[in-house]
Image 1 (cartoon, rainbow, N blue to C red):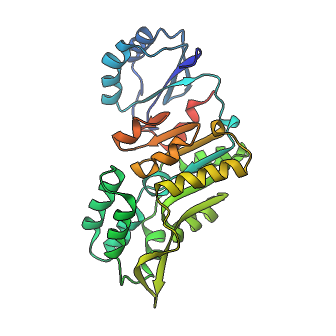
Image 2 (tube, helix red, strand yellow):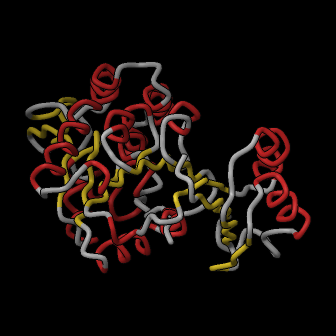
Length: 290
């Protein structure tokens, strides 16, 4: 851990009133030896000069979880503008839904497909196998439902627009690297002004989904490879890359970023990233940087 470390505490905007009790902050300061407490926003507290101790893990972590407060020990010299690329998973990260589950709803098979999706995100099923199983259940579905899902069911995750606006203001390049589908990633790329988007292309024949994808499958390894390629093409080092994801399929991609974020993620993912946001919106990433 770097010598100069801050403890950042944050909760979802408007979740608590007041968001932090003086007792909780005092206990955090006592258990970390922090020299000062700053309040950059009502839902954020930054404890300067903190260090992680056994007392913090034993006494403070359960309290933060109970109060739905995210935390991270962060090098206080990190600045958001120092990064050159931020890459997002799409489903359940940049957007709130799993697109394939919503497509399955139109086929009357949402529960069946969602169960496979959840198992894949927990790492219990190989992604390629899970994709093949789920797509097979969509064979024969009218392709017009793609537009319905995008228009009626797709919602951005809280803080997504704010984070992207900050990234673009900092002249950071932005990307979606997804095991989802190009119908959605390309529209998001255009609507949000993203620089890059990579995902799977659904095969359509006679106006119906065939239950297959065209070309190479974008799985966990492919997502990681695309991130490495973008990093090299942009002339960046790994340390200048942020990656955000939520499932086991994102782990190789996250491992190739200097700053990795588990967003409302499965436990296995939270344990292998730089930070985890379990309650805050995507714009909570901004609060980690000085």
